[in-house]
Length: 190
Image (tube, rainbow, N blue to C red; front, side, top):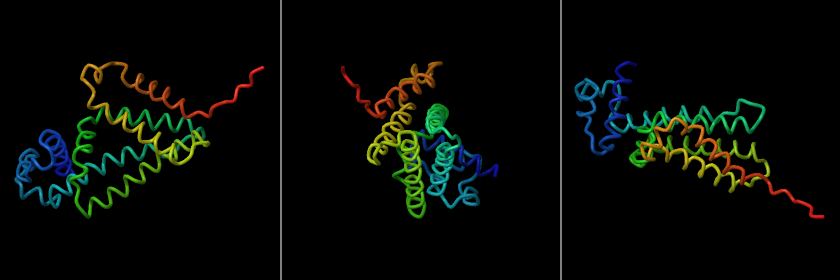
């Protein structure tokens, strides 16, 4: 597992710096301290490495979408907090996903796209549990707008990403935006 972890770390750094198509297997091997052919003892090639990186990230993100509280608001807040923290800690991985997911090929592509759909479905379920009056389309919009905001964080200017209050401010802004999902109350005028 140590060799695989070294390869994955080297691949993440290299894919982030040069892009998936800008890197050879030999370069990945060298960056991991191996010869190119030695890399094939752990992975079938760059495609499997990319798939592994993306699936490991998705595993972590999906784990945060599993409800653990009786209170749907707490579950949604927990998922959002986890995802903002992930975007702050794993900015390069977010960048790799955004640029390189289209580089996946089958059989990895089909499996990953299926898992990614399950991930979106879980987010929509979190919104529907928290806001049961929503229709499916609105839950999907809420999901994508929330994830879009979160996963844009690694692309924000450094002074913003390095702010000591970025986590809490981002959570507050998202919570404020989610207030738009609350049902409109009829106010009786007398």
